[in-house]
Every structure is written in C-alpha cells, then in structure tokens.
Figure 1 (cartoon, one colour):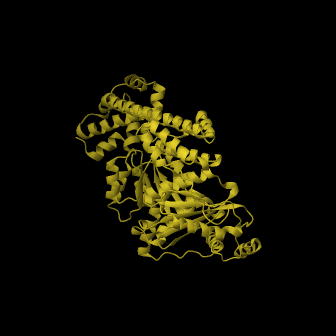
Figure 2: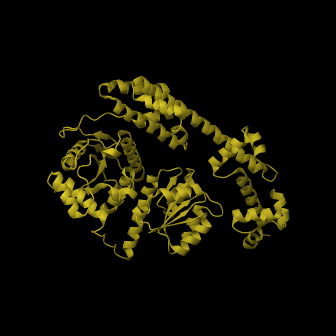
Figure 3: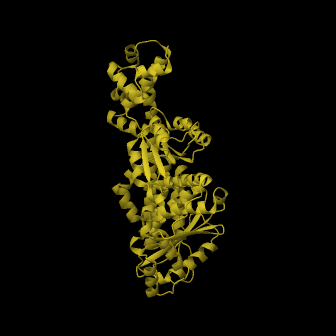
Length: 529
C-alpha cells in the first residue's frame, strides 16, 4: 500500500514518517506534500491508498483538497490532522467520509489505530475488484505465532528439552530457559463486530495491542498470539523479565485502554503473571484465562497472578485516574488529598514500596493525561528535578505520596491557567495584527500592545499558531491583496503599497509563496475588474 502525508509543518511530517512502523502495517511507500494543491497533484499522479492530511495549510487547506477529490473517479481513504477541535472540521470529516480526524499532538499508537481502520477500508475496496491474496503460511512471523500458540495450548510436553526441540524443528529462535512473564488481555468485542467482520477486527486489535506492548517494528523479535473466540478478543505476550517493570506495564495498559476506548469503543482487561519458565507458560495461560473470565468488569483493570500457580491474588486496588482528573478539573485540591489519604489507609496492609511506585505512576499518568487533554507539553514537567525527586520519594509512605499529588496539582493547574492567559494574549496579538497589518509593524509594537516581552511573544505565537509573527502579517497582507486584485483595477504597485509592502518584488515573492502564483497570474485567473 501507498500513503501520502500532506503537512506543511516539517517537524510534524518528520515525526509521522519516523515513528510509524510502515512496513509492519503493509505500507511500502510513503510520499509527502507541503500543501493541499501539491497534495492534489500527487494524489492524481501516484494514486496513494491513504492520505494523511493537515487541515490548516497555506495555498490550499486539507478540506478544500478533499472536496476537490469528490469529483474524481479515484478517491483514497483520508485521515485529517488538526490542532483545533473545531465543530466545522468534524462536520467536514463526516461530509467527506474520511476515516477519522486526530487532534495534535497525538501519540503514535493513536495514528496507528486510525491507520489500521483505513487499511481495513482499503482491503474491503480491493475485495470488490479482486479476491484478497492468501497469506503466506511459511512466513517467519506466522510460523513464530503458530509455535507460540501451540506452546500455550499444551501441544508440547512441559519439558524444557522437548520445547527446545520443537522450536528447532519449526525454525524459530526460542530460548525456553529465558525467565519471562506472560501478559494476557481480554476484551468484549460485541460493539466492534457491529462495524467490522471478525477477521478485520482481529487485524485492528492485534495491530494496536502489539504496537503498545512491543512495537510493530519489533514484532518479529517477540512471541505473542492473538485470536477471537466467541465474542471475546484474547492476546498473549511473552515479556522477558529483563524488559519488564510494573510501572512500564501500568503505562502500557493505560495507553492501550485509552486507544481502544477512543477508536473502537471497547474496554480491555489485563493480567500479568509472575516470572515463569517456558514449560510453565501453558498452565499460566490457563490461569490467566480463568481469572479474566471471572472478572465482572473490563474497565482498564490491571491484575497480577500469584506465584503459587493456583489462584489469582486479591486484585490490588488502583488509583482511579478518572477520579483524579475530575478533581483536578474541578479544582478540588483538598478533596483530592482526602481521596488519596483514604485510599492509602484502606489499602495500607498491601502497599509495599513496589506497589506504591505503581500507584505513583498511576497518579503521574492521570496528571499527564490531563495536561495532554489541555494541549500542554509534558516535556518540561518530565525534566523538572523537583518533580523527579518528589516522585522518587512518593513510594516511601502516605505522607510523601500526598505531597507528590499536591505538587503535581499545583504545577498542572498553574500551567493551565498560564496557558489560558497566554492564549488570550495571542488572540489579542492576532486582532492587533489584523487591524494594523497595512502599517509598518513588527513584534515590538505587538508585544507592547499585549504586554509581553518580544522574544517570549515570538516563541509563544509560533507555538500557539504554528506561524511566526512575520508570516501571519504577510498572510493578512496577501489575503487583502487578493481581495483588491479581484475588485479593483489598481496597479500591482499601488496594491502592494496599500496592503503594507514597500517593495513590489518582495510583494510578488510573498504573494506567490502563499497564493501559489504571482499577483499578475492571480488577476488573470480571477478576472479582476
């Protein structure tokens, strides 16, 4: 399959190109274009299967580009990207039948989830014209999965030597003596089966789960298996003990739960074994299945099996991230501290340092999730030495855990308030530019108007709008020039001076950059008066 990315922000384009495991998704060619007009040309020339397009772009935006495709015989599957949750964008997505649209910034697994849906659509279209090619049963990846399923299904004796012989016969590199854990997932897929066939839904769920757990690009190096049985999705991953940590497992479980809930409206449960050998994997899988079948709720729960291989331990109660986020959103700091205090008192007998670290991680994920929801960069918080020290101490006891929660609350709410204030300053800056762009203005005049330091304003303006101040001024000038070209007979020199340019050559260069043609060509095209 072939994918086209239409994105004018080079950092976003580079992030998508480098973080998505294209080959693992069956995508062999990735093309790019900087605006809708160029994207349209590439689409008509190369006929990509899928187009990932930003909405806000110069020359031609993503919505206009997609609208142009409505008249074409060939139409790719389209995914919209946008930095703004505008209702009109959602309406356009529905009107054009796009796969989905993502709000920037987004995690790679969210784009993979949407890409997988697009791939399923492409496969469906291909089936209408030609039968799907059969999968190659001799492929290394399929052989590896088949071996792992046999191992989990008691096909081999529970003997290290016999398992090694079976692996050699099947041509798979498997070390039966490597200490590892079995991670099992279960999801009720009834809602998903209303939209997809069982085969398609298995493909989607396997891709998303594998990307979160081990990364699709590393799938061939790991042992996992996924299947649908009845109305349930099951997945099993063998994680070497050297690569396992409780904190990382909690983060992965939360990320997977969020991705499935957001894009498929499904809930998933996870159970993790203690360290086991290869000969214990089949029995451990049975215990995990039995435990997951007994669960009455699949609401993003993470459980652990005991060492005695008999019964699952009493499930350690976890901090409710939903409750934490709600209390932060409603600015109820004292109630958050009280909730955490009661939680720790209730579970005091079971809260060893390792589990306290897992709870600390759950708190961190709740705050990070709320920052992400409010379009705040978490990088600064991750690098804050005070945060790292307080988080490290949080597992020492209840007092330190509550201190950590209070610090995080103060930090996050302050940043959100600051961001809202900054957003208001940028709105004022944009309005000032729109009223004065015909004059000789620069960042100093604008900074004086909104009461910010010029350097800080420049950095903030670019972060909020994706454009420099000078670019925004020039865009305003070009838009006004276009109107004057359409409605007047003024010379290009007159129009350039009227909209704020003092150099006709520079005016022509900037006009071409944002309009895609020279002012003279534009007048010829629109037939100005």
